[in-house]
Length: 97
Image (cartoon, rainbow, N blue to C red; front, side):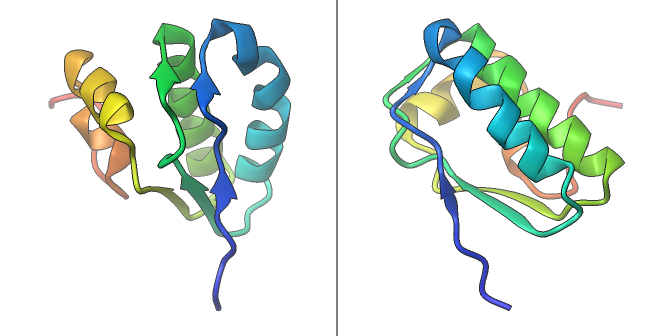
């Protein structure tokens, strides 16, 4: 089954997370496959990373198959900065064991 990606907007910052979070969390809790396209994100801060972590946690709890697709360079850099490389990989642990 082909899943339409949900495109995450350009700004994934503290100023935009509050309005974006309910929609992403609801989708993560749906139990349906969720594909978040991160290619358009040009600005991300700690609040954006926290939202991605929350979405992943909620998806795991609801057994929603989650994919973070096409992360932009800035998303990849922030994920790497926080040493959360597993965040963008399906079924990878978030923290070193």
